[in-house]
Length: 291
Image (cartoon, rainbow, N blue to C red; front, side, top):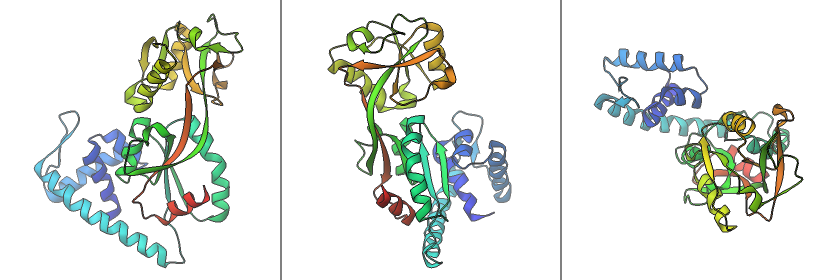
């Protein structure tokens, strides 16, 4: 057993889901399942009850998790120390993001960082917006580029704002407002809306609702969905209106969707780079200094 693979077990124990754990570690679900089975065979113990959802660790699984956690933390500390000694080599920078707007805010920074640190490996992983702070607190990544609403109430997480702007209305072809150059808030809230669910965008969902109420309107959210593609489908086929940060591309949908400015609206966004203030990563420090 390679000690670095203990992270697979630790992550699986903490999130109780094979699919999510495989995604976090950039491996296939089949490879993860094979690794866990090999551990159980090696020790002659069952670590998880796979017959329930989410999977449930056994007493042996919990004991192995506690030992693995301690061992892996010591291993990571050793790696970091050795990296500093060896030609000042820095460990990879693990970056997570949740939307296209995040990538658009992040990409202008990458070339400058690679010029200064050409040997640093950058690892990218897409996560749900609601998981942003959790990923940082648990050390699953070094930095999360996401809407700042997920960081403001977390005492362990600090953030640096990368980009700010306004939300636009996403309107489908055939909708009465489709050809407008702009839409008033009053006009907007006369129509049914579709939004990504709280399960996907976390605090941002309630923030969008409260901002509408600040403007004096009660949003008519008839649908909440789990992914962008479903949201776009409902905008095109059912006539719902959605929200998107200005600059977000809808080119993949041809002439079927337009982004239209909302007049006198409180709907603004802020994309930020969030990080755990207790992190000791020299790579993260270098990236933050560049920002």
